[in-house]
View (spheres, rainbow, N blue to C red):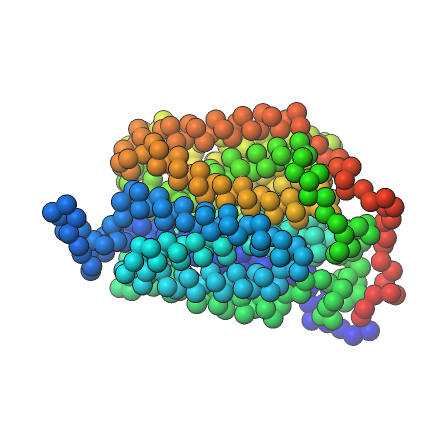
Length: 460
């Protein structure tokens, strides 16, 4: 029997590389959230607006709204076709193309910002198109490469990419903006890093463990253990209409939508709120955003471990408890943030940290409900969560644009925090009566056969 480097643990290499590529695509579109602050102070290029000289990079609230919405538009346009391609043909080449589109459009944004708002918006749409493949890739990697007992761990780590991307991007961009290079180099740095990561993806990733000579028979047996024939069948029919009509799945998506809206709101406007309202400096803002988002990452992994290993509580009640913390309690805490006076900025900081900590346990809430209820079709349900994120990319900026005219006015932010927080609380309240750990009827094939792959029949 041959010995393979990483042969018994190749799934973890897939997991790490996939995670880094997901973070890269996400980082590319959120750089703008922090560089808005730096661009406003860049007076290298000026123009006359209403009799006043103003930086060409000092965008109005409406222009910022359109720049944010462009990513959402690209993601919405791309979600259905890219998810269909990934589910049908695998993640390797579609996700590679998406990564290349993302990094090249990112590298061109400084030029577009200087020359044309229309070109800028077009590049943001391309970033959205690339981003639309992320959740389909997560679903496929989980279904194809995760052993059943590690499903929650795979989902927990892969869905950390938003927090990690925000943490790295905001802290790195803060340093670059304050350096002699200027904000433009943040885009160049991210594009170059993305090129390296997707080269690694093209080399490492394989769509199906059965097609790989890089893994051992022991590893393949571990990945396939106790999976049904339907689960292992790459060409099985997917009951899309039954999935869409499922009350459980609809409430999963409802909870995902409102939580995603809050997360997108934080990722997009937290630097602005900390700097404009709470009066932190640019460097402090970058550091604190990184800290806030950093708490989310280890908690997701711990939550996954607890969700999988706690045995004295039923799966259904674990899902309800975790979801209540993730969506319900975090919603109430989010609503509280708006009422804290700006001079007590440390209290706001603590509440924001708490929101992101509570959100971290969603892997044991609506995500796990989706995985247990949809079983072998979980990748479709998880990919559809991408669409809720598309809507969130519109809804979060829309709520802010509706209520906030002057970004430094704390009172204008109050209805933003309250509306988002109350919506999350209501969505969770509905889920208490709907969520279940039982598989849906449409997950059961006519002849369900569970096979444990004999080691002697596996490749070495």
